[in-house]
Image (cartoon, rainbow, N blue to C red; front, side, top):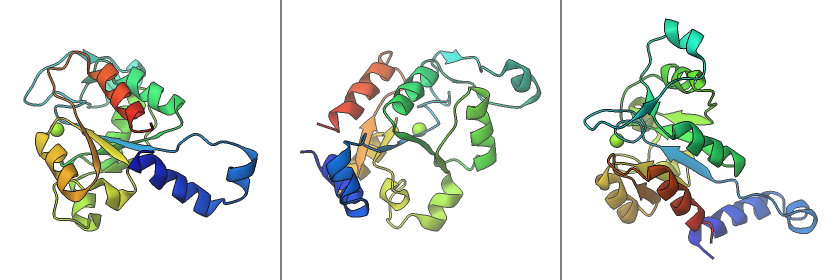
Length: 178
Ligand SMILES: [Mg+2]
């Protein structure tokens, strides 16, 4: 059994030892975090983007368009029962980020920006998902992948020019559960 599954199951069984173990088999409550720049939002690299669902409100708001496929990918994660978080080293405000995803019809479970990271992360790493209970981070930075190995957290490295990025992330996330 992979480390992530045993960690999550230990947490669930420690919290609800009888109920969960005997009466039903719960979905794995994985917390998945996504980077923004060059992963979901165009920064140095360009990739196709999609239009918001809430066009009326988008007309009045300043926002950055999301990478084409983001909504489908996040819908998939929600269907699995997973939490969706944003973890960015930018100083975009939490309210801006939540509003941006709201325009696309996506509710986020949590946001970590550089300010929150600086206050709460307890490792000398550019990102440290375990400080926020996050099980895996999806990021375009190879540095984050290297930090994942060094500080023992799960990181999925997805490059901005990967046209199969949605399928690759789905299969890598599912592979964490086997
Ligand atoms: Mg990035």
